[in-house]
Image (cartoon, rainbow, N blue to C red; front, side, top):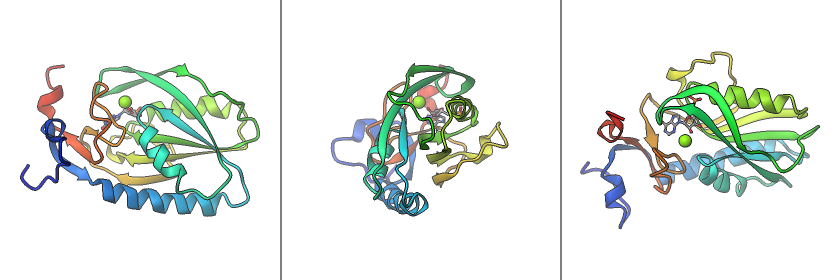
Amino acid sequence: MEDMRIPEGMEELYQDLDRILITGEEIQQQVRELGKRITRDYAGKKPVMICILKGASIFFADLIREIGLPLSVDFMAISSYGSATKSTGVVRILKDLDKDILDRDVIVVEDIVDSGITLNYLMSILKQRGAKTLKVAALLDKPARRKVKDLVVDYSCFDIPDAFVVGYGLDYDQVYRNLPDIGALSPTVYEGK
Ligand code: IMP
Ligand code: MG
């Protein structure tokens, strides 16, 4: 804990972390790189960027400001049934897109791909709606936990080990989304729940 650089006034929230995995500065650097890559890959196109609420909201806000294209944005909220730290694969749409994605170049922006079950389900729904192209940009990837083996994560910023992480949009029980860094939540916080 001594080597954690805790932002002033955030001591209480950081108390529940075992360690900081990725600092806010490291995130910004990778997000900038990803923005440049997407700008190059979609040159001449007008992609629709879909933010998967709520986890991807902070990543999304930073990422789109690093992309130099006439993109448009839309939002979708889904919930996967399961416990707070594991998903089951059944996805419910809580808020659907405002606009049709037929014949559009679509980039889905997700916070984290863990088992891959949620994203796989979501992609199959979006595919049926006739997007011209459909890709995924995820902030974090936990490849060791993947259950859907053939799931392609087109863009990701960081591969992380098998730990439950919070911060920069990611939550545990709706808390910790506002941490500027990404940290491993101490198991004592969720054990026995
Ligand atoms: P999957 O279906 O197992 O890939 O789970 C994906 C969803 O579970 C993500 O969109 C997150 O909302 C949540 N999730 C998975 N791992 C973590 C984590 O380490 N911290 C916070 N949320 C997580
Ligand atoms: Mg979540």
